[in-house]
Length: 328
Image (cartoon, rainbow, N blue to C red):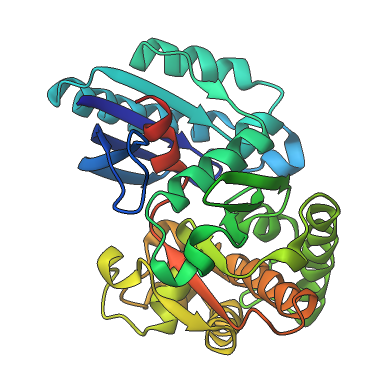
């Protein structure tokens, strides 16, 4: 058994997972085939908005760097406290897009003593699928996992579309739409105007078409959404009295219910969203855009699968788990 730490630094949040990794045997696996299993020790999330302004300036803002470095110092203390043996730090969309990413890399190296990896969209997609598929509920595994499942990782700066099955990734594509990017680019009013929504939808639709050029969405037999926008939308659809990962993880809802929740969050005022009991303060201003992206993705899936996909599953396990599994 190995104690590892995984850090996922995205456009909106930075997250830490400290876990014990051990080999495990799945009940349906053949002799000698083993898959790692994670036992959580610590899960932490801080909204630092590293991607503040990156879509417009292509640079990481100094105040965003300072927020991120402060969180990294706290994470470094937790890593030391819990006797971690191996650490992997992964940075995604905002850092990929930034001209001054070396400032970020140097700062994280000084704080944590590890080289932060600025990974490609394809690498991000593969890690997201690995993390989600490690704990997918049975409802998301048609035919025992052999039929293709689409995992959608809806982040702050990018969204990953990954089609795979029990044997691994079949096709993947990362596109530059996310809740922070669409909010900063288009959704400026409170609530956003129909014109702003239409402009954002045009960007999202074009991005989904880009993904579909690589990923055969029509082959998907189920869809699993991961990351904070999707889980928060699910919390709203369930009308939860507070944010509960246990209540959200593995929840399967019909597409109409999910899309209605997306529309409600998009059309609310900032004050109305802030009053929701499950809403993290760091998501209040960007969850409307998250709802817009998720709504368009689900509509496209319903169309291209000729109505075969009628539900969506939410997963609390994602790229963070994939990072932890990758260092085992």
